Image (tube, rainbow, N blue to C red):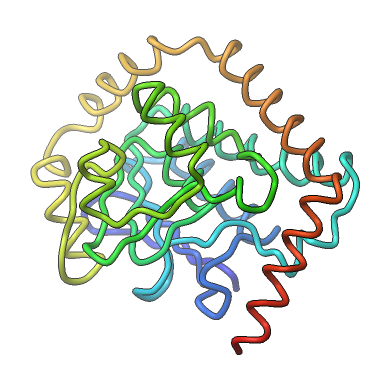
Length: 255
């Protein structure tokens, strides 16, 4: 199983990507599992959703290139990208609090998943960045649109356009990370949540509703669709496939 859904005694549901051998990269099974977790939180008594990765080396390294590199055309890419973008938009609009519990590396699509969450708690060893530009594509799961909702536009554009990896203190200073922790995932989650689990669920949902009322879901969804289409166009180009081949060959030569 590429994922696990866990009931936490803190009242949250936790979704764990369990592909440590692939640095918790996303495949279609992970997509299905994340949608299942989101749907379960919507319909249940859970206070909210926590997303993390197995182990202490990676939260999520983005899409699994060993799977998605087989997609060559714009339409093939669009089918995959729009599928995950719809899931992350659902996460972004979830009427309960959501937390990305970052542990280790979070790059590319991993950063998009984290951005879709309300809060980002990060271990001090976390390193993260929107590195899609290094593969000659843009964000393709709606993360660019969501980042521009989270951070000032100049800060968000800087993260997207530089396509570099930042360490946890830098991310905290930029406002991308809300809380830094040491120790285990669970210790970090408890410290970051503080008193939130003791608050009535109706109160948490009421505050989240205030945030959601600020957003125009139709406008945001349209922007996400355009973002996915732009990435799909770039995906088909030779520049992207050349960059991915170089990355895969370099990675294999280091094994």
